[in-house]
Length: 232
Image 1 (cartoon, helix red, strand yellow):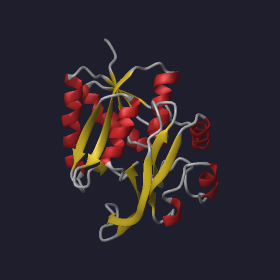
Image 2 (image 1 turned 30 degrees about the vertical axis):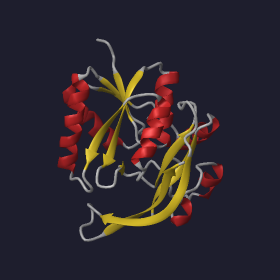
Image 3 (image 1 turned 60 degrees about the vertical axis):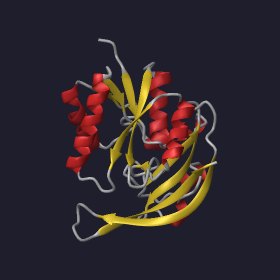
Image 4 (image 1 turned 90 degrees about the vertical axis):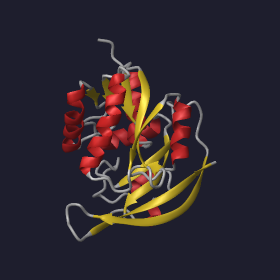
C-alpha cells in the first residue's frame, strides 16, 4: 500500500524537529499538516498562537493545512468526536500514516495510537525516548529558532515568556522543569530553521495570565502565562 503521511503540527519546537527528522533522516514524504485551533480565540490550542502566524508557518513549510476546530473548553468526548471527523476526511483522501513530536509521555502516545488505530493509521514518533537535553541542543545546533509563548505559571513565572529558546533560557530553567517542556511546562513558536523557506517575521506583544479549571482537582485552578505574538 502506498504510504501517504500527514504530520500533527503544534507550531512549536518538538513538532519542528520531529518533522525535520521524518523528512531528512527517515526519508518520509509528508504531504499535509494537522493542527488543533481554538475557534473562540482563533489561536492554536494550548500554545495560544494567533492563527495568522500558524498560516505563515505553513506557508513557509509549503504544505496544505487541515484544522481541528475546537470550542473554548472542549470535553474529551467533544475533542474525540471532532478529531475523528477530521481523521475520517484525511483517510478518505488516502492518508494512512502520521507523525507526532511526543518524546516520553506513555499515556499520550497510547491515547493517540488507540484513537487512530480504527482508521488504519500508522503513527511515527521520531523523537520517542530520546534524551530531552540532547534534543534541545540538537534543535539549536541545527539552526532552529523559537520564542517561548506559554508557561505553566506554578513552575515558570512571567519572566520566562517572550524569551528566545536558547541555551541561556535552558540554563535558567529550574531543576524540576524538563529541558523540552515535555510535561507541559512551556510551549514555543518556531519561526526559523531548515524546514522553512525563510524566517517568519513577528513582533512580541503583551503578556497575560489566564487560569483554567483543574480537571484532576475539582474546585481548583491552574494558571498559565502567555506572550502574544503578532505577524511582522
